[in-house]
Length: 209
Ligand SMILES: [Ca+2]
Ligand SMILES: [Ca+2]
Ligand SMILES: [Ca+2]
Image 1 (cartoon, rainbow, N blue to C red):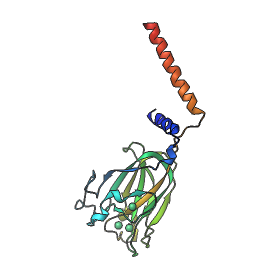
Image 2: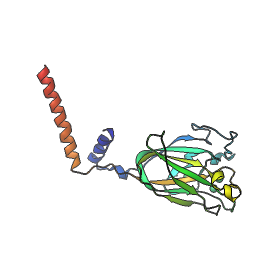
Image 3: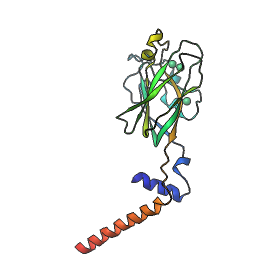
Image 4: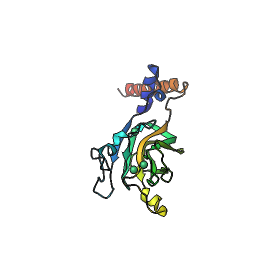
């Protein structure tokens, strides 16, 4: 109900939910010492020693900007969006050249930040030089949280090890926002229904009194 009322307010002011850019909040990040985390450098995740790579705020919605967050080997990061979203999604990874920096991550969606659905796996294409390389993910569920879990070591185990020292490097991602703007006809019906309920309650109270 709260969301419906918010949309109604937006409609009165001539705006729509879709026109407002979503914002991203870091919920937890294993290798970012300023965020809630389950581990950090020295805990076995092989987090980067470069401070520029351990700031999860470097991850942005939209196109990659070159600033990125390294997940750490088997490290994870979880974001919350202020809008519901679905696929398709694009995940932008950074690999600064070289052919032996094989990295991969699983991507998870969640409605409540507790239960997760595996949406797919993204890689930097077997270590090719993919600065700003983007991988597309298609999924149909509707979520509010997006999580990334580094699986570089296990994913590339058959290739003689990962070659990565600090895990998947996440620059940016996009999602497809779910429009919550109701059909125009539904809005008057909602208002009429609310007024009708209020009237009934008043009548009940009047009879009791
Ligand atoms: Ca990389
Ligand atoms: Ca890396
Ligand atoms: Ca970025």
